Length: 364
Ligand code: MTE
Ligand code: MO
Image 1: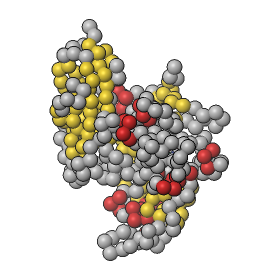
Image 2: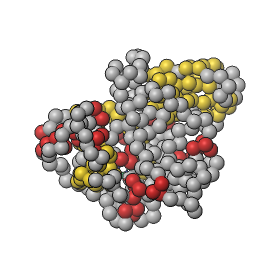
Image 3: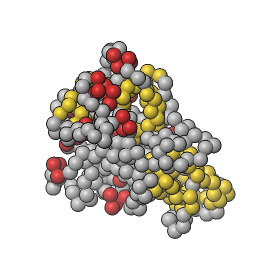
Image 4: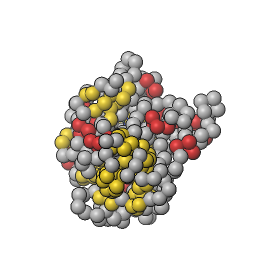
């Protein structure tokens, strides 16, 4: 059923323009801390444009390499449809990847045009920075994809917002936004605009479709009949998330030692304090080991690690009988993943961060 392209699966194609969407198999996703470009998920709302190379000026600015995880707000959406159907591209657990993004800091670029960097004494006046792409999206009536972030974040060098022209040390490829894309660390993927065309300083947040009529978190009581978009804010930070990647759901395994591994990540520069794993359906828990660089224990202090990047976790346990294995992470602000998907159900199926469960059957 799933067509395979290189190592990615097509998850959905639209009717005419066929925006290209793909995610890798979960087992491949955590085989390395930095996700290879071929395994990095691709999310597009319009046809992928072909763009000429960028102005040299951007390359004259100091270059930063920031290791940051990009996660689509719709990651794990398919599992949210199980209780009640949601609308959107049906992602499994791999609409996420961790890459080394190379480029100029947005704060440096803005300073160049006279917008001062954010320091404790400056006020950014509640303005916003808008990123406009050159792709054409049906949702924007054929107009470009766009998004915005607060000026205070854009002018803060510590926020590490990049205009990136490299991914994992190579020039960005077309799928990921060649020649230039925005990377907003810690924030849902939708704000990291690809094929960047222009940047605007605006008084109000961007009024584009993907800011105002999409990517907002509604309560379970809101459905298409009673939705009022302007009652909610555009989603920015990603909540705490973790996923088991070493096992498929309903997998048959041999009795004995089983390696349980996966990824955990939170938004807003919050590190991962703990990953708890249960092998008895949530009755008891034990803590998994966490790492970014293999062999080096991970400490969620924001200094001795990559502060915008996921951590991988691992636990090897004896599984004597068929059971449900669960992972849940705790971030550095002590936020915990919610237990039930029903409690966070929302009509667009975003931010499914409910406890990740896999059922295993003991076979022979
Ligand atoms: N930028 C443009 N111009 N067009 C898009 O459709 N999709 C957004 C974001 N930037 C999008 C975009 C979404 S929803 C996500 S999750 C990320 O790009 C995906 O980035 P990737 O394809 O490099 O993984
Ligand atoms: Mo996304």
